[in-house]
Image 1 (cartoon, rainbow, N blue to C red):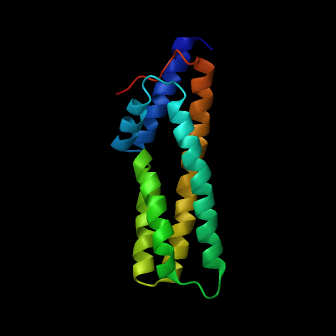
Image 2 (cartoon, rainbow, N blue to C red):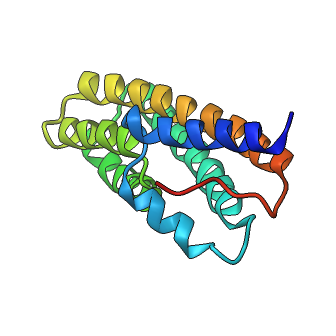
Length: 148
């Protein structure tokens, strides 16, 4: 594929993150932190995805316990929310907020439903970024997606 066509696809895909409400303005700030390093963003998001996978598994395991205490989940949820907000993952952050409110209301079913939605939104985010970074690698380190 010609580089200009690939760059258009990259730009379109990147814009779709914002159009679909998956990412917010914070993501642009994270991108700008790595302006001198074409692999910076991929490294940051790889770390986020690795830690988030562990966070989701921890939450799911805790919720399987018959003696689950929703208030005990607030701390890991806040940590996960901070990580998600720091990269601009809006949909994931919004679902985490709902889980936190469920914890405060001691509503285990609400928390379980929110964690299922967190996992769903996280999975979409991860898949989209896998595709995005695959295209970025095809374009090579000298080519970058155009900022809006």
